[in-house]
Length: 122
Image (cartoon, rainbow, N blue to C red; front, side, top):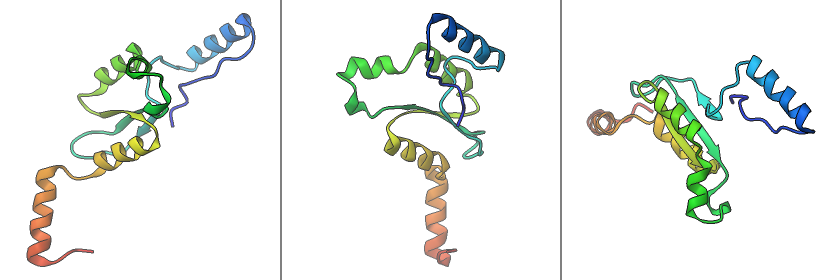
């Protein structure tokens, strides 16, 4: 998990000090919550932006607003070499990770064909 999100507590001065400390530590707005540093399907890793389940938002406009401009920009900046996903709840995150780690359709078809010919490797 990337320690990039923060709950800022206290008065205005205390929050300003927390933000300044976070910036000194290299925190950047928009960086995804989770990063899977494992290459798969020609990509170097998977960035997942975690959100609460879509059902918890009061309307579709609120769901769209939950994915900020900074988060969208970060995903655009890394998408040439990394997979990205916005996951509304753990079930979507599990699906995104499973899909990322699964072989692409063509490779899956070849594996299936080889298993039919020669039997499963498992």
